[in-house]
Image 1: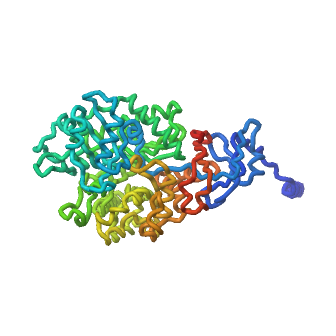
Image 2: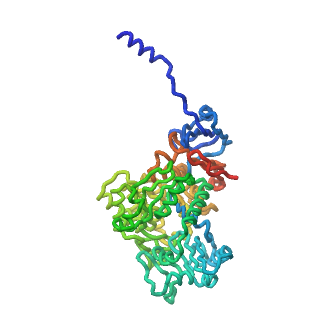
Length: 560
């Protein structure tokens, strides 16, 4: 046995021979790279192999890994952050907005009409004119518009303009005629037809009442939808987005996503939420191909996830459809609308738990949020489940009693920082000085231990994620108003804001093992910026420019 002990002793002294290091096919050096990984939070170099992060560290080490055909890029001090993910964004809505009349930012009803007239100068009589973006809260007269001026300007074309939040629309007389709208038309549950003093429809239809007009609008062709999707993806990449969470898409649209991803024409990672399919036992739900397939993750090399369901509790604050526990301060006869009944949300929450689908509920008002939390609570008592990651989309106005319930139930508040900066000039008038303290309450929620995946809700807000980052850390609009920020005690730190656009959306989508940070083994998704948003003064954040956007080590956008 002596010779064996001698052998082991000699072996222990022998040098360790490492296997050959895998060569990289892409190396970035000389940058300031924020990994959002606590193991190596800030580095100068990154190596990529086969679309995934191979190494993070120093320039010298990364250069060693460069293979003979590797692309080696000197960043010249540029900043790199992980691929930015918008955790609540409507891809087809953006694509449609890019090809329809855009009235966002209009300063008056007259401005809206002028923009439509300029856009529609070549439209033939009888053709539908569609657009989006009006917001009466931006106008001197903050009342809802009525159709007469629009009908006078466009007597021969049916015309529909969605409000910026997508929860109300304005239709002209021709559109209402084609939709067979009369003073006797009944309001659907969860919807409101705004009336003139005469009792005739004013042209404004809120929440579920929008369907009365939508049913008359010709559906886009598959080719038109495909073109809109590709245009929206390109727009996302231009602003540094490598991924989105896409709430409420139908089977036909998801089918086009799959078709594009299968062909390699889908430069985005999309976490798709299936649109509310009706009651769980309804034929529509039972025959929905994506519900029948069951949860799907990381399809087509991590470009599509189809494992969540999107529901609606209420409407929006701007159109006074958000469901409140007490009436609106500026409309004492109105406490908002329930778009779905609580039993519907409970039924889908239970179904989701049993079948492995995440359930994500749109809730803006304090009553809407309480209903969603109560539904989740009830479902989890019936079907106890760990790590369900149910979400409330927006979680915009919360009763103080409900803020701790997110952490207690394991529910994720998915919020949009630029909603706060868009709404802050009128939100307090809507809900009063007490309730407003529970509105856009990021710090109050973070202090309970939850994470907040951030987004824009585009096309409700602009695509640019730097607006999200700036709003999160300053509580100010792009003009840096108000000084010090609106209820500044609710600000995020810059580290939290970056996490809310990278690793927290990944967690909220069950993707944290493959996305959200520049860690070895994860997809090499990243954005190169021309300035360091983590260190420049607040007033310079929005001056940053996206130099390039990369998905899986492939450049999908480069600034000219």
